[in-house]
Image (cartoon, one colour):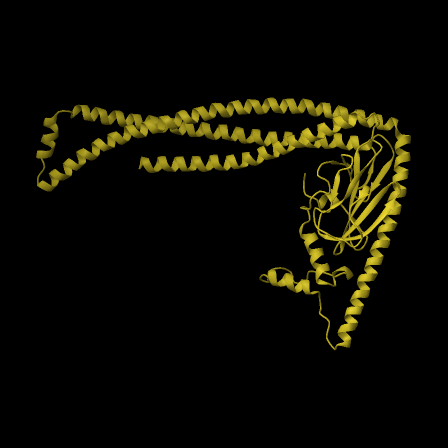
Length: 439
Protein backbone atom coordinates (compact mmCIF):
# COMPACT_ATOMS: atom_id res chain seq x y z
CA UNK A 1 0.00 0.00 0.00
CA UNK A 2 2.75 2.41 0.99
CA UNK A 3 4.64 1.55 -2.20
CA UNK A 4 1.66 2.62 -4.34
CA UNK A 5 1.28 5.85 -2.37
CA UNK A 6 4.99 6.52 -2.66
CA UNK A 7 4.97 5.99 -6.44
CA UNK A 8 1.86 8.21 -6.80
CA UNK A 9 3.54 10.94 -4.79
CA UNK A 10 6.64 10.78 -7.00
CA UNK A 11 4.48 10.86 -10.16
CA UNK A 12 2.47 13.94 -9.15
CA UNK A 13 5.60 15.68 -7.94
CA UNK A 14 7.28 14.97 -11.29
CA UNK A 15 4.26 16.22 -13.29
CA UNK A 16 4.08 19.37 -11.18
CA UNK A 17 7.78 20.09 -11.67
CA UNK A 18 7.56 19.33 -15.42
CA UNK A 19 4.64 21.73 -15.95
CA UNK A 20 6.32 24.40 -13.85
CA UNK A 21 9.56 23.94 -15.78
CA UNK A 22 7.76 24.26 -19.11
CA UNK A 23 6.20 27.58 -18.07
CA UNK A 24 9.51 28.70 -16.63
CA UNK A 25 11.31 27.87 -19.89
CA UNK A 26 8.81 30.01 -21.82
CA UNK A 27 9.32 32.92 -19.43
CA UNK A 28 13.09 32.54 -19.64
CA UNK A 29 12.91 32.68 -23.44
CA UNK A 30 10.87 35.90 -23.28
CA UNK A 31 13.33 37.36 -20.80
CA UNK A 32 16.25 36.48 -23.06
CA UNK A 33 14.45 38.01 -26.05
CA UNK A 34 13.73 41.22 -24.10
CA UNK A 35 17.36 41.39 -23.01
CA UNK A 36 18.51 40.83 -26.59
CA UNK A 37 16.29 43.67 -27.78
CA UNK A 38 17.61 45.93 -25.03
CA UNK A 39 21.21 45.17 -25.95
CA UNK A 40 20.53 45.90 -29.61
CA UNK A 41 18.62 49.10 -28.81
CA UNK A 42 21.40 50.30 -26.52
CA UNK A 43 24.02 49.67 -29.21
CA UNK A 44 21.95 51.53 -31.81
CA UNK A 45 21.24 54.40 -29.43
CA UNK A 46 24.93 54.65 -28.57
CA UNK A 47 25.76 54.98 -32.28
CA UNK A 48 23.06 57.62 -32.76
CA UNK A 49 24.34 59.68 -29.85
CA UNK A 50 27.65 60.06 -31.67
CA UNK A 51 25.75 62.23 -34.12
CA UNK A 52 25.02 65.57 -32.48
CA UNK A 53 21.88 66.06 -34.58
CA UNK A 54 18.76 65.02 -32.66
CA UNK A 55 15.93 63.19 -34.45
CA UNK A 56 12.44 61.86 -33.77
CA UNK A 57 13.90 58.42 -34.44
CA UNK A 58 16.01 58.75 -31.31
CA UNK A 59 12.88 59.35 -29.26
CA UNK A 60 11.20 56.29 -30.81
CA UNK A 61 14.28 54.28 -29.94
CA UNK A 62 14.19 55.37 -26.30
CA UNK A 63 10.45 54.60 -26.13
CA UNK A 64 11.04 51.13 -27.52
CA UNK A 65 13.80 50.61 -24.98
CA UNK A 66 11.38 51.53 -22.19
CA UNK A 67 8.78 49.10 -23.59
CA UNK A 68 11.37 46.31 -23.81
CA UNK A 69 12.51 46.94 -20.24
CA UNK A 70 8.93 46.95 -18.96
CA UNK A 71 8.38 43.65 -20.78
CA UNK A 72 11.51 42.28 -19.09
CA UNK A 73 10.18 43.40 -15.70
CA UNK A 74 6.83 41.78 -16.48
CA UNK A 75 8.61 38.50 -17.25
CA UNK A 76 10.67 38.81 -14.05
CA UNK A 77 7.44 39.24 -12.06
CA UNK A 78 5.96 36.14 -13.67
CA UNK A 79 9.15 34.22 -12.96
CA UNK A 80 9.09 35.38 -9.33
CA UNK A 81 5.47 34.24 -9.02
CA UNK A 82 6.44 30.80 -10.35
CA UNK A 83 9.37 30.63 -7.94
CA UNK A 84 7.16 31.50 -4.97
CA UNK A 85 4.62 28.84 -6.04
CA UNK A 86 7.49 26.38 -6.40
CA UNK A 87 8.77 27.21 -2.91
CA UNK A 88 5.28 26.74 -1.45
CA UNK A 89 4.74 23.46 -3.33
CA UNK A 90 8.14 22.13 -2.30
CA UNK A 91 7.52 23.09 1.35
CA UNK A 92 4.16 21.26 1.30
CA UNK A 93 5.82 18.18 -0.22
CA UNK A 94 8.59 18.26 2.39
CA UNK A 95 6.07 18.47 5.24
CA UNK A 96 4.20 15.53 3.79
CA UNK A 97 7.45 13.55 3.46
CA UNK A 98 8.37 14.33 7.06
CA UNK A 99 5.00 13.04 8.28
CA UNK A 100 5.37 9.89 6.19
CA UNK A 101 8.92 9.44 7.46
CA UNK A 102 7.72 9.73 11.07
CA UNK A 103 5.02 7.12 10.38
CA UNK A 104 7.54 4.79 8.77
CA UNK A 105 9.92 5.12 11.70
CA UNK A 106 7.15 4.47 14.23
CA UNK A 107 5.99 1.36 12.37
CA UNK A 108 9.57 0.14 12.04
CA UNK A 109 10.17 0.72 15.77
CA UNK A 110 7.09 -1.38 16.58
CA UNK A 111 8.34 -4.17 14.34
CA UNK A 112 11.74 -4.06 16.08
CA UNK A 113 10.10 -4.32 19.49
CA UNK A 114 8.03 -7.26 18.30
CA UNK A 115 11.12 -8.93 16.81
CA UNK A 116 13.05 -8.39 20.04
CA UNK A 117 10.34 -9.97 22.15
CA UNK A 118 10.24 -12.97 19.83
CA UNK A 119 13.93 -13.15 19.08
CA UNK A 120 14.71 -16.74 20.22
CA UNK A 121 14.74 -19.65 17.76
CA UNK A 122 12.58 -21.58 20.25
CA UNK A 123 9.78 -19.08 19.88
CA UNK A 124 9.96 -19.33 16.07
CA UNK A 125 9.97 -23.12 16.16
CA UNK A 126 7.22 -23.22 18.76
CA UNK A 127 5.15 -20.89 16.51
CA UNK A 128 5.63 -23.27 13.55
CA UNK A 129 5.13 -26.58 15.37
CA UNK A 130 2.04 -25.36 17.14
CA UNK A 131 0.25 -25.44 13.80
CA UNK A 132 -2.80 -27.72 13.67
CA UNK A 133 -1.80 -29.26 10.32
CA UNK A 134 0.89 -29.26 7.65
CA UNK A 135 -0.72 -26.59 5.49
CA UNK A 136 -1.05 -24.30 8.48
CA UNK A 137 2.68 -24.81 9.22
CA UNK A 138 3.56 -23.87 5.64
CA UNK A 139 1.46 -20.71 5.94
CA UNK A 140 3.23 -19.80 9.20
CA UNK A 141 6.65 -20.24 7.57
CA UNK A 142 5.54 -18.02 4.66
CA UNK A 143 4.24 -15.46 7.16
CA UNK A 144 7.61 -15.34 8.95
CA UNK A 145 9.41 -14.86 5.61
CA UNK A 146 7.03 -12.10 4.52
CA UNK A 147 7.44 -10.42 7.91
CA UNK A 148 11.22 -10.31 7.43
CA UNK A 149 10.72 -8.92 3.92
CA UNK A 150 8.29 -6.36 5.32
CA UNK A 151 10.94 -5.12 7.77
CA UNK A 152 13.51 -4.92 4.96
CA UNK A 153 11.02 -3.01 2.82
CA UNK A 154 10.41 -0.63 5.71
CA UNK A 155 14.13 0.12 5.93
CA UNK A 156 14.32 0.68 2.16
CA UNK A 157 11.29 3.02 2.22
CA UNK A 158 12.76 5.00 5.11
CA UNK A 159 16.01 5.45 3.19
CA UNK A 160 14.20 6.47 0.00
CA UNK A 161 12.05 8.96 1.88
CA UNK A 162 15.09 10.41 3.62
CA UNK A 163 16.91 10.75 0.30
CA UNK A 164 13.92 12.41 -1.34
CA UNK A 165 13.58 14.74 1.63
CA UNK A 166 17.26 15.71 1.32
CA UNK A 167 16.84 16.32 -2.43
CA UNK A 168 13.80 18.51 -1.79
CA UNK A 169 15.70 20.45 0.87
CA UNK A 170 18.56 21.11 -1.57
CA UNK A 171 16.11 22.12 -4.30
CA UNK A 172 14.33 24.44 -1.86
CA UNK A 173 17.59 26.16 -0.94
CA UNK A 174 18.46 26.65 -4.62
CA UNK A 175 14.98 28.00 -5.34
CA UNK A 176 15.22 30.49 -2.48
CA UNK A 177 18.59 31.64 -3.81
CA UNK A 178 17.02 32.03 -7.26
CA UNK A 179 14.24 34.11 -5.71
CA UNK A 180 16.78 36.44 -4.12
CA UNK A 181 18.60 36.81 -7.46
CA UNK A 182 15.30 37.56 -9.18
CA UNK A 183 14.44 40.28 -6.64
CA UNK A 184 17.89 41.84 -7.05
CA UNK A 185 17.50 41.82 -10.83
CA UNK A 186 14.06 43.42 -10.53
CA UNK A 187 15.43 46.21 -8.37
CA UNK A 188 18.24 46.75 -10.84
CA UNK A 189 15.87 46.91 -13.83
CA UNK A 190 13.52 49.29 -11.99
CA UNK A 191 16.45 51.63 -11.36
CA UNK A 192 17.50 51.51 -15.02
CA UNK A 193 13.86 52.02 -16.08
CA UNK A 194 13.76 55.27 -14.15
CA UNK A 195 16.95 56.33 -15.93
CA UNK A 196 15.38 55.46 -19.30
CA UNK A 197 12.32 57.58 -18.48
CA UNK A 198 14.58 60.50 -17.53
CA UNK A 199 16.41 60.05 -20.82
CA UNK A 200 13.10 60.13 -22.67
CA UNK A 201 12.10 63.35 -20.89
CA UNK A 202 15.43 64.91 -21.86
CA UNK A 203 15.01 63.92 -25.53
CA UNK A 204 11.49 65.38 -25.53
CA UNK A 205 12.86 68.59 -24.03
CA UNK A 206 15.59 68.75 -26.69
CA UNK A 207 13.07 68.12 -29.48
CA UNK A 208 10.96 70.98 -28.23
CA UNK A 209 13.97 73.24 -28.61
CA UNK A 210 14.31 72.18 -32.25
CA UNK A 211 10.65 72.54 -33.17
CA UNK A 212 11.31 74.86 -36.13
CA UNK A 213 13.80 72.46 -37.73
CA UNK A 214 11.51 69.51 -37.16
CA UNK A 215 8.55 71.41 -38.64
CA UNK A 216 10.58 72.12 -41.79
CA UNK A 217 11.54 68.45 -42.14
CA UNK A 218 7.96 67.26 -41.60
CA UNK A 219 6.76 69.72 -44.23
CA UNK A 220 9.27 68.37 -46.76
CA UNK A 221 8.37 64.76 -45.93
CA UNK A 222 4.67 65.57 -46.31
CA UNK A 223 5.32 66.80 -49.86
CA UNK A 224 7.06 63.51 -50.63
CA UNK A 225 4.21 61.58 -49.02
CA UNK A 226 1.66 63.29 -51.28
CA UNK A 227 3.79 62.57 -54.35
CA UNK A 228 4.13 58.95 -53.27
CA UNK A 229 0.36 58.58 -52.82
CA UNK A 230 -0.30 60.05 -56.26
CA UNK A 231 2.29 57.84 -57.92
CA UNK A 232 1.00 54.68 -56.22
CA UNK A 233 -2.61 55.51 -57.04
CA UNK A 234 -1.59 55.89 -60.68
CA UNK A 235 0.24 52.55 -60.63
CA UNK A 236 -2.75 50.76 -59.06
CA UNK A 237 -5.22 52.32 -61.54
CA UNK A 238 -3.03 51.37 -64.48
CA UNK A 239 -2.67 47.78 -63.31
CA UNK A 240 -6.38 47.49 -62.52
CA UNK A 241 -7.19 48.69 -66.03
CA UNK A 242 -4.76 46.19 -67.53
CA UNK A 243 -6.17 43.35 -65.39
CA UNK A 244 -9.75 44.33 -66.28
CA UNK A 245 -8.88 44.47 -69.99
CA UNK A 246 -7.31 41.00 -69.84
CA UNK A 247 -10.44 39.67 -68.16
CA UNK A 248 -12.70 41.25 -70.80
CA UNK A 249 -10.54 39.75 -73.55
CA UNK A 250 -10.73 36.34 -71.85
CA UNK A 251 -14.50 36.50 -71.55
CA UNK A 252 -14.78 37.61 -75.20
CA UNK A 253 -12.71 34.62 -76.34
CA UNK A 254 -14.88 32.25 -74.30
CA UNK A 255 -18.02 33.78 -75.80
CA UNK A 256 -16.61 33.43 -79.32
CA UNK A 257 -15.89 29.76 -78.60
CA UNK A 258 -19.36 29.24 -77.16
CA UNK A 259 -18.03 28.43 -73.69
CA UNK A 260 -19.42 29.62 -70.38
CA UNK A 261 -17.10 31.55 -68.07
CA UNK A 262 -16.23 30.07 -64.70
CA UNK A 263 -17.79 31.59 -61.60
CA UNK A 264 -14.39 32.13 -60.00
CA UNK A 265 -10.72 31.60 -60.82
CA UNK A 266 -9.26 28.12 -61.08
CA UNK A 267 -7.06 28.80 -58.08
CA UNK A 268 -10.18 29.00 -55.98
CA UNK A 269 -11.07 25.44 -57.04
CA UNK A 270 -7.55 24.27 -56.25
CA UNK A 271 -7.77 25.77 -52.79
CA UNK A 272 -11.13 24.07 -52.24
CA UNK A 273 -9.64 20.69 -53.24
CA UNK A 274 -6.74 21.07 -50.83
CA UNK A 275 -9.04 22.31 -48.05
CA UNK A 276 -12.33 20.33 -48.22
CA UNK A 277 -15.32 22.01 -46.55
CA UNK A 278 -15.99 21.18 -42.90
CA UNK A 279 -19.33 20.31 -41.35
CA UNK A 280 -21.84 23.13 -41.64
CA UNK A 281 -21.55 24.39 -38.06
CA UNK A 282 -20.92 28.05 -38.88
CA UNK A 283 -23.15 30.80 -40.17
CA UNK A 284 -23.63 30.18 -43.88
CA UNK A 285 -24.77 33.78 -44.39
CA UNK A 286 -21.31 35.24 -43.85
CA UNK A 287 -20.08 37.32 -46.82
CA UNK A 288 -18.28 35.47 -49.59
CA UNK A 289 -14.90 36.60 -50.85
CA UNK A 290 -15.20 39.35 -53.46
CA UNK A 291 -12.67 38.75 -56.23
CA UNK A 292 -10.86 41.80 -57.55
CA UNK A 293 -9.55 42.31 -61.10
CA UNK A 294 -6.12 41.22 -59.81
CA UNK A 295 -7.56 37.82 -58.89
CA UNK A 296 -9.21 36.82 -62.15
CA UNK A 297 -6.30 34.48 -62.90
CA UNK A 298 -5.16 31.46 -60.92
CA UNK A 299 -1.77 33.09 -60.40
CA UNK A 300 -3.25 36.34 -59.13
CA UNK A 301 -5.58 34.65 -56.67
CA UNK A 302 -2.87 32.30 -55.45
CA UNK A 303 -0.54 35.26 -54.86
CA UNK A 304 -3.22 37.10 -52.85
CA UNK A 305 -4.04 34.05 -50.72
CA UNK A 306 -0.39 33.32 -50.04
CA UNK A 307 0.21 36.90 -48.94
CA UNK A 308 -2.87 36.85 -46.69
CA UNK A 309 -1.96 33.49 -45.13
CA UNK A 310 1.42 34.88 -44.06
CA UNK A 311 0.03 37.89 -42.23
CA UNK A 312 2.08 38.40 -39.07
CA UNK A 313 4.80 36.09 -40.40
CA UNK A 314 6.33 38.05 -43.27
CA UNK A 315 10.09 38.63 -42.96
CA UNK A 316 11.43 42.11 -42.40
CA UNK A 317 12.74 43.90 -45.51
CA UNK A 318 16.07 44.56 -43.73
CA UNK A 319 18.08 42.21 -41.54
CA UNK A 320 18.73 44.74 -38.77
CA UNK A 321 17.11 47.98 -37.76
CA UNK A 322 14.37 49.59 -35.71
CA UNK A 323 11.20 51.54 -36.47
CA UNK A 324 12.03 55.23 -36.21
CA UNK A 325 8.72 56.34 -37.73
CA UNK A 326 5.59 54.36 -36.77
CA UNK A 327 2.55 53.91 -39.02
CA UNK A 328 -0.20 56.51 -38.96
CA UNK A 329 -0.49 60.05 -37.64
CA UNK A 330 1.03 60.91 -34.29
CA UNK A 331 2.14 63.96 -32.38
CA UNK A 332 5.80 64.78 -31.89
CA UNK A 333 6.21 64.78 -28.09
CA UNK A 334 7.08 68.14 -26.63
CA UNK A 335 5.70 70.00 -29.64
CA UNK A 336 2.38 70.77 -31.30
CA UNK A 337 3.55 69.12 -34.52
CA UNK A 338 1.98 66.05 -36.12
CA UNK A 339 3.74 63.56 -38.37
CA UNK A 340 2.02 61.13 -40.75
CA UNK A 341 3.47 57.93 -42.21
CA UNK A 342 1.68 55.70 -44.73
CA UNK A 343 4.09 52.93 -43.77
CA UNK A 344 6.88 52.45 -41.26
CA UNK A 345 10.25 54.15 -41.44
CA UNK A 346 13.03 51.73 -40.55
CA UNK A 347 16.43 53.07 -39.54
CA UNK A 348 19.27 50.68 -40.31
CA UNK A 349 22.91 50.71 -41.40
CA UNK A 350 23.78 52.79 -44.50
CA UNK A 351 23.68 50.69 -47.67
CA UNK A 352 21.88 47.79 -45.96
CA UNK A 353 20.31 45.22 -48.28
CA UNK A 354 16.56 45.63 -48.75
CA UNK A 355 14.74 42.41 -49.69
CA UNK A 356 11.26 41.49 -50.92
CA UNK A 357 9.04 40.15 -48.14
CA UNK A 358 7.00 37.83 -50.40
CA UNK A 359 6.79 36.39 -53.91
CA UNK A 360 5.46 38.87 -56.46
CA UNK A 361 6.00 40.97 -59.58
CA UNK A 362 7.77 44.33 -59.77
CA UNK A 363 5.02 46.72 -60.87
CA UNK A 364 6.90 49.98 -60.98
CA UNK A 365 10.17 51.73 -60.21
CA UNK A 366 10.34 55.49 -59.94
CA UNK A 367 12.40 58.32 -58.45
CA UNK A 368 11.12 60.48 -55.64
CA UNK A 369 13.48 63.35 -55.03
CA UNK A 370 16.76 62.08 -53.63
CA UNK A 371 15.82 58.42 -53.49
CA UNK A 372 14.11 55.64 -55.46
CA UNK A 373 10.97 53.57 -54.96
CA UNK A 374 10.20 49.94 -55.88
CA UNK A 375 6.60 48.69 -56.03
CA UNK A 376 5.92 44.93 -55.92
CA UNK A 377 2.46 43.41 -56.43
CA UNK A 378 1.31 40.22 -54.69
CA UNK A 379 -2.12 39.57 -56.20
CA UNK A 380 -4.35 42.34 -54.85
CA UNK A 381 -1.71 43.45 -52.32
CA UNK A 382 1.21 45.79 -52.94
CA UNK A 383 4.40 46.27 -50.96
CA UNK A 384 6.38 49.47 -51.40
CA UNK A 385 10.09 49.89 -50.68
CA UNK A 386 11.06 53.55 -50.71
CA UNK A 387 14.00 55.71 -49.62
CA UNK A 388 16.32 53.44 -51.54
CA UNK A 389 19.78 54.63 -52.52
CA UNK A 390 19.98 52.09 -55.36
CA UNK A 391 17.74 49.50 -57.05
CA UNK A 392 18.61 45.92 -58.01
CA UNK A 393 15.42 44.83 -59.84
CA UNK A 394 13.65 45.77 -63.07
CA UNK A 395 10.02 46.43 -63.92
CA UNK A 396 8.07 43.25 -64.69
CA UNK A 397 10.61 41.03 -62.90
CA UNK A 398 9.26 38.08 -60.95
CA UNK A 399 10.76 38.09 -57.45
CA UNK A 400 10.78 35.65 -54.57
CA UNK A 401 10.71 36.38 -50.85
CA UNK A 402 14.28 37.38 -50.00
CA UNK A 403 15.14 38.73 -53.47
CA UNK A 404 17.42 41.77 -53.21
CA UNK A 405 15.35 44.83 -54.11
CA UNK A 406 17.93 47.54 -53.48
CA UNK A 407 20.07 49.29 -50.89
CA UNK A 408 19.01 51.62 -48.08
CA UNK A 409 19.67 55.32 -48.52
CA UNK A 410 21.53 57.49 -46.00
CA UNK A 411 19.58 60.12 -44.03
CA UNK A 412 20.75 63.39 -42.45
CA UNK A 413 21.91 61.52 -39.36
CA UNK A 414 24.30 59.44 -41.47
CA UNK A 415 22.18 56.35 -40.80
CA UNK A 416 20.56 54.02 -43.30
CA UNK A 417 16.83 54.46 -43.78
CA UNK A 418 13.96 52.92 -45.74
CA UNK A 419 10.19 53.23 -45.70
CA UNK A 420 8.10 50.09 -46.05
CA UNK A 421 4.40 50.16 -46.96
CA UNK A 422 1.60 47.65 -47.49
CA UNK A 423 -1.30 48.74 -49.72
CA UNK A 424 -4.37 46.91 -51.02
CA UNK A 425 -6.15 47.18 -54.38
CA UNK A 426 -8.33 50.02 -53.05
CA UNK A 427 -5.25 52.16 -52.34
CA UNK A 428 -5.83 51.68 -48.61
CA UNK A 429 -2.64 51.80 -46.55
CA UNK A 430 -2.32 48.96 -44.03
CA UNK A 431 -0.16 48.88 -40.91
CA UNK A 432 2.98 46.97 -41.96
CA UNK A 433 3.77 45.97 -38.36
CA UNK A 434 0.69 43.72 -38.33
CA UNK A 435 2.02 41.90 -41.41
CA UNK A 436 5.67 41.51 -40.36
CA UNK A 437 6.75 38.94 -37.82
CA UNK A 438 8.08 40.05 -34.44
CA UNK A 439 11.74 40.91 -34.11
